[in-house]
Length: 219
Image (cartoon, rainbow, N blue to C red; front, side, top):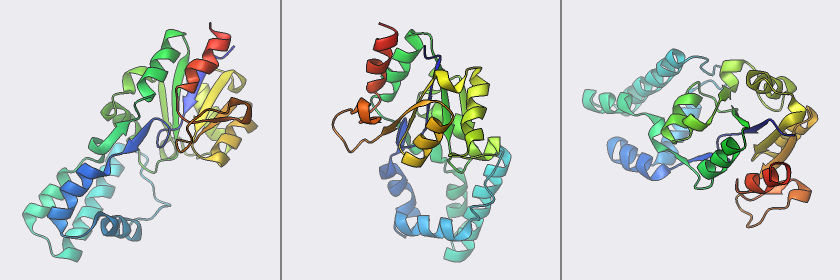
């Protein structure tokens, strides 16, 4: 009997809608969004991921200020940069909420386990309109361990008060799916480029498969 479903965020529950980001940044900065992304990864230290919301705010603030200096931007442009909230471009896939509702209706708990390198996982789920259906959200920088380390999966299972063997797990990275299987979870890779589920091979094309999987145990 399954007691919980655990899911990754990006590529599974949500995606980033780049159109509004492009509309915001390109006229403001006069550079393509790809160049902004390059400058971000050039500036930041991947080993220094923020573990709190305050640290995250300081991280973004430091980057915006460095960009102001590098591009010789105005005080007004600086203010606009500091006002940007990335969660405003987080969108839920159309199948995400129905799948979570179907899970809730069967009395299962729901967790999210993400390797996203920011601390604001909860805020992003609120922005996507999914937070009310999620019991526990664990971000790698906050819990101090990342997938595919066994402790990452065990941490979210403990937070949900369930055994790993009683969990269904969904992710879009094969190594992270294999990590879940290694601790005893029944895990599936989400490949949204496919058009059909292949449950026998551990692959689904979207989260509508959750209803099929639960119908076997919870008719």
